Image 1 (cartoon, one colour):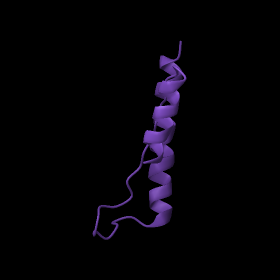
Image 2: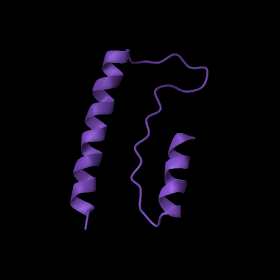
Image 3: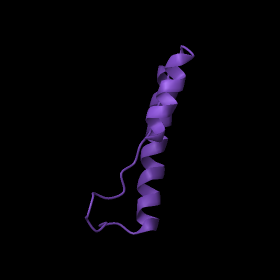
Image 4: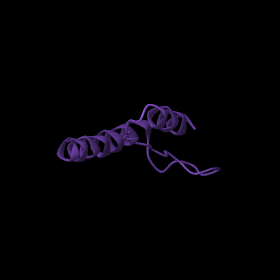
Length: 58
């Protein structure tokens, strides 16, 4: 929901948005990763997104 609001504001101002979302577990499912493991995965994936973003910036 929060990312949709950010995207809406960006569009209203004629700007782009790059949104990184992480789903830590499914509804009703127990997570197969600990919090520490999840943080490591999220940090790695976010770093990849930043590299991609920097390569695609005008």
